[in-house]
Each structure stands twice: as structure tokens, then as C-alpha cells.
Image (cartoon, rainbow, N blue to C red):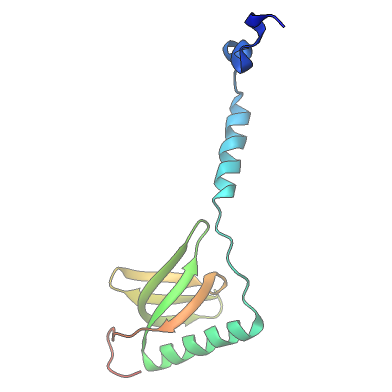
Length: 121
């Protein structure tokens, strides 16, 4: 084979181009690969989360709530102010402000070591 043809991919480097549709598809694929895949909770774990949420709401306890969004896992420490069963969300007040979290996004509810606002728990 002629030495001028043994250039690897350099032979076609000058004629490469990418269509805008291809750029969009590559960006979408990269974004999808970074998506957070939450673990699936079984019925007993869901009942335990429900029990802890009800107890923390009734006693005004400080809790650590683990939840996820589209791309990552988050934890927030605060007090459950409201449980909205119709919209399936809970309202958490913390030092950073007020946050609504969907029931479907919850992964963990633990009672915090420190006291947030109340003395009982």
C-alpha cells in the first residue's frame, strides 16, 4: 500500500461536518446518560416512609429527607409543615427556605439528631 494512504483517519479529516440535527441528538444522548436512576422501593419501605412522615408531621420533629430530581440525589433537613395528599407533595421548611417534594421522588426519611424548631420528638 502506498505510504500516502496510511494516514489513518487523516484522509477524511478535511471533509467532516456535522448536521445540526446530529449535534442535537448527541447532546440529548449525553444528557440522558447523566440521568439519575433511583432505586425502586418495595411496599414495606413505602409504608415505613409514610409512617415516619406522619410521625414527624404530628410531633413537629426535625427530619432528613432524601429525594431525587432528574439528574441527582439530594438531602434536606427541616420540618414537615404540610402534607398535601391531593397533589401528592409535602412541604418542608428548612434553613434555606421552603421546599415542596413530590411523594414519588422520596427515597429516605430519617429523624435528625439535632432539634430544628421544637423540643419534642
